[in-house]
Image (tube, rainbow, N blue to C red; front, top):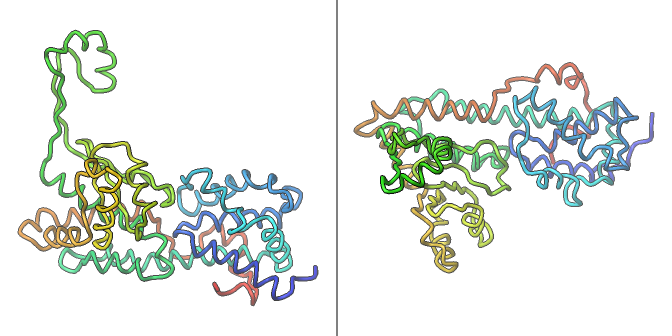
Length: 361
């Protein structure tokens, strides 16, 4: 058996790994990438040289994606820059990874098992929180209780951005559908000569032509999809104009500027915590961007509208549809994992333990 690290070295590399785990959202893409590098290093030592980052920097994303498809049915959609910072000095640089690799081999894969236990534990926490919605009725569901269960649970805090977004989307989508909101586009009859010249453009882009100058369609709200919160991209958009930014974080000037800088629309709806409304308005006014903001919606607005939809005058028309939409988005975003997935059982992680690699620091 190879000589192990001394306790101080082990503690140092464990702190580095634990920090990456704590910062990760529920999908744990980055910790899983580390686990897969260690797995390859242990089982196929000729394929990975931990002292040479180029032997695993790009390849490890593919290794991670393969197992994430098995575990989650999806892969990371974060930017390449965000994914690559896994190996920065403040995360798990090669020097730390080398020491993790030594200890992982010495313990027969205990660090891999440790990472995947954090993954299943995180999903167990998530399942309990999500069961609240899946088992709720229109009378029992309280959106504030649901949001707070993520805000104050250490293992779930990093996923509140997506929960917040889902809560907003479900409400907006349900109300837009219930109102039978219609969007109309048309071409001025005086512009027929230009229309004739660009008839193929009008047909392919606007679905209009010389015989159909006006078109109506149902209004819709769309989520952009699963992206990392650090990307600061557009969260939702509508087909009647406004772009929608959902912000759950405490905002500073840089984040507030990012709201507008990263969205080119001249009609932006911002959803934020009540405490951030004044800061956003102040910064937007200072920067001369106030005219681009259509409205600022706070959590208090969301709570009021949810209460009306679930318990108000039109609860029979709105309540069940709202909860159904909420459940569907949650199930899509967070696949259920009730026990150790089969692919991890095959590797024998259930039987790999080391007294040091047991608890998250």
